[in-house]
Image 1: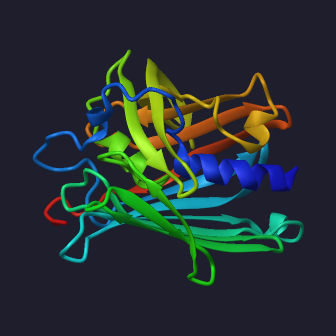
Image 2: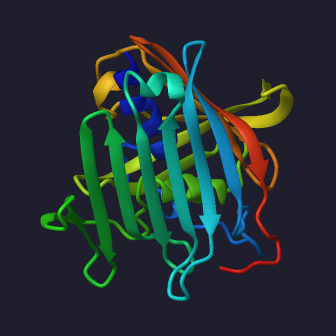
Amino acid sequence: MVKYFYNHMVRHLLITLILGVSFTFILSCSAFAESKLPFRPGEKIEYNLYWTVFHAGYAELTTSTGNGTSGPIFNATARTNDFVDVFYKVRNRIESITTPGMDSALYYFKKQREGDYHRDITLRFDWNTFSVTRYGSDGTFRQKLPIYPGEFDPLSILFSFRTQPLEEGYEFVCPITDGKKSVIGRAMVSGRETIKVGGKEYDTFVVEPEIKDLGGVFKKSPDATLKMWFTADELRIPVKVQSEVSVGHFSVELSKYTPGDPEAEY
């Protein structure tokens, strides 16, 4: 059960908005034309991870300045707490680098350390040939795929979503790749709701990503659901993720938000 939790909760926290089938309005995933992105360099979002009612670990999302030839750099980490470490230790990290205008991905690296399972994955995007190349743990070539204009990886797609002008009924459609396949993801803003997380109330938009093409425990649970809550303000902070599956439910809940430097530039 713990393995189920981390194989899928961690993945869906970081992927979140994936796997539809339509190519319609594909350009809607480009960064919304604002004077500043809602996330600034130095932003840190910290989470508690729960399996049913049990606290199982921690996750963190951070944003930093690009290297001069790229846009924002995003990092995500997830780890089990001391109690769960005894049974199934997890130390996962993801890094994503986007283009200067944040209109597509450039680079993606995932380091998985889950129990005895260790794997590294690197994706390199080539916008001259509209392709992405996937490399394995030893740096060897694994696969090359054609990609759509404006395609994102499983982490940067979350931040692309945060640039959108959310409102009830809004549908987000965007191409996404994990290096194994390239698909069109879709998510619907299904409502607006005030929720309490960590003893604090938040005015949020409720977002429901399509999950019909998700694998693992979602594929085995015909009645599975996945919902996310984003603050209904200019920051659009993901404050909660919750899923119901056949083996129970997981939740990812905001514990601390540290804003970035409003004057810093990418």
